[in-house]
Amino acid sequence: MPGSGFEQWVAEFEAEKARREWIADPEWARGVELPAVVARSLQKFQVGEDGDGANLRAKADLAGDAAYAAAVRLFVDEERNHARLLAELLGAAGVPLLDGHWSDGVFVRVRRLLGLRTELMVLMVAELVAVEYYRSLRDGLADPLAREVTDRILRDERRHIPFHVRRLRQSFAELAPAARPFAHLSWLLLALAGALFVAVDHGPALHAVRTSRGRFLLAVTRHAWTVGTRMAPRGGRTAAEPLPE
Ligand SMILES: [Fe+2]
Ligand SMILES: [Fe+2]
Image 1 (cartoon, rainbow, N blue to C red):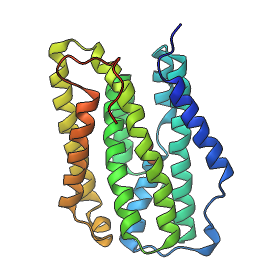
Image 2 (image 1 turned 120 degrees about the vertical axis):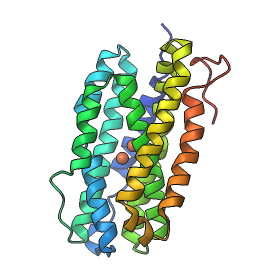
Image 3 (image 1 turned 90 degrees about the horizontal axis):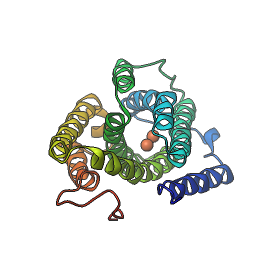
């Protein structure tokens, strides 16, 4: 029986896991200096990274694709590792962790109510926001430890986007053709709303790393446009086609 295509993703996630275990953790003992607004912003992102993996795993199991379910487990492990890295980074800066944050509580509760397709659409917005956020921090922070951690996380978040695109293409293809443009547009609006929320909420941190709310918003919107056309292709193309790179 031909595979679903996610066997390749399982292999890639496993290779990444082996690489992660092989490379040493950053040297936390050397300490880190973070602007206070960036530390506050990272506290919230740390809570978000530590999200509701069990819920996503259960939905992936129900989708009936063993390779996809295995890949989702490895994906969740990577997100948990981001939470761990950020916790260590904040610890090295002497900044306490938050128990939770209202925005993350809302995000998790909404996701629990959704089916796999809608949950992945929401998660994809979080990935796009994360890529621009960690890129801004990596490029704008002076501290070498903070740059190293944000670079490590950024590398993973970039890989997560084509992983979700692959599954979402399949999900979009399962929709009635007339419903696809509506789903595509809804997702673009969701991406815009998510980017706007983060740009406003984390504006001071973005400013501290020499970017602006507007630049952040524009970068996420541009990226969302490209990703949106990949996961909801028009012109009669199907999910069976290979992903453009
Ligand atoms: Fe993450
Ligand atoms: Fe991610």
